[in-house]
Image (tube, rainbow, N blue to C red):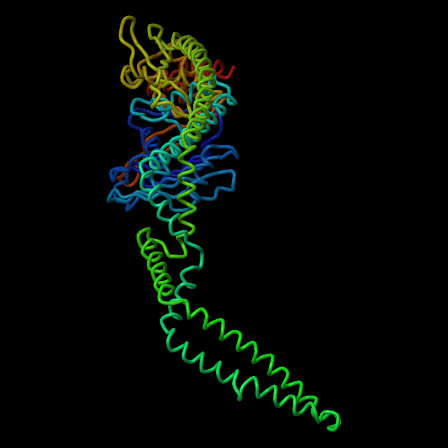
Amino acid sequence: MLLGLSIRDVVLIDRLDLSFRPGLCVLTGETGAGKSILLDALGLALGVRAESGLVRHGAEQAIVSAEFSLSRKHPARVLLAEAGIAANGDSLVLRRIVGSDGRSRAFIDDQPASIGLLRQLGEALVEIEGQFAQRGLLDPATHRAALDDYGVADADRAGLAAAWQGWREAAKAHEAALARLKQARADEDFLRHAQKELDAIAPEPGEESRLAEQRALLMNRERLTETLESALAELTGERGERALHTASRQLERLKDKAAGKLDAALAALERAAVEAREAISSLETLLRELGGGPDSAEKIEERLFGLRALARKHSVTVDGLAALRQEIGARLAALEDGGDAVTKLAKAAENVRKAYIAVADKVSAQRRAAAGKLDAAVTKELKPLKLEKARFTTVLAALTEDEWGEAGRERVHFEVATNPGAPAGPLAKIASGGELSRFMLALKVVLAKTSPVPTLVFDEVDSGIGGAAAAAVGERLHKLGQELQVLVVTHSPQVAARGSHHWRVEKSQAAQKTLTKVEELSVEARREEIARMLSGAAITVEARAAAASLMADGQA
């Protein structure tokens, strides 16, 4: 709901602060007083296009702030959260600053924001109905949601969206598996050839480093052999292991006479003999490895180079060949049973598709029933509004499967025909300005309880009518005000008399400049204003009596 509107330097308004309340709020005044300026100013705060001509002559900038109450579940909070703007309070302030050069800036609760976000919030908070309005129910894109709010169960709408999402996920899984299978089949010859090469060489993890070490060893075989044989000769000769045994036997003979002084030396000689035997064994083993002959070196080198060439071919490391072999084997195995997996996913996707269609059929049936009910209710409202020859129709157009979505399988739009036999068409294109406002009034009265927008603005909804028709407009605006906050700019005394709150807009001359002023009227001032609307400049006793009667009837 709109709580307040603050205007600074907009056209003929220098400084104006208005507070609004629930119910039907009427704004009256003579033609040219500046009522449209108020709507232009509100439009700025709601994100409509800004023009430099809106800045009051002599001022550097125009500023408009609109404050709204914001329930905890209002859709505007979702928009704010997505934009990263915190809205923890129960109200929201939209502010627009327009410079004399036409450039503008937007703020939401004093936080800089884009004009686009301001416009989105404006559409969620206020709907302006009038000859030049292009938003709200004049936008066919909103008609399906309006019909669903009117007559489709929330649980079924949520179920439809969930079924659509499930179908999309299942379809994507099937498409991905099919693409993988197609790619695998295209690569099958290559994979089988690669597997054959890898199976033939049978790479092992860590094999490259082992082969490199063996190759380096064999490349120095001759020098190593000569050195090893010389070392073995020393260890097994007179100065080696044999010398240790000889020394140990000699000391053993004198052990008893040395009072234990030789025990440590004998133990050390024994350890040395053991270590010498181990050294001899290691050297002999290495000599045997080196004695494998030239074929061994060639085989090691051939295998090492073969592994490295295969690794380069597949753009992996040598140590990665073993993993590649396993991967290719797995891909070929998947290829062999891939057809079955794709078939299962296709069947699963078709089952979810059928579930979506079942829920969509249920929603479509509710839409058809709601459309008939809506058409009848709107038609009933049209006759008192002097539109008895008009025909309102809710059209459900089937979509192709490619156009199906989470909202179902049909497009919804409202059409009207203003005269019998005339073709029906979109609201904004068929109806004239005054007719359009009354069509929208009738539609809004019917949809009031389900409207997601808490504030409605009607601009001269009573244009071109009077008497009973104007009274009917006033009655419906009053009824609508019991569900929503309604602001109406009117020239009709019958409409003004129905208002819960009343403001008068008038021009005044001050210091050689013309300004627009807005005053909230007391009960007595309201009677005078309605009397003026009835009789003109000269207010008669009869006009005051008629005004009092209208006001009494309006509040009954």
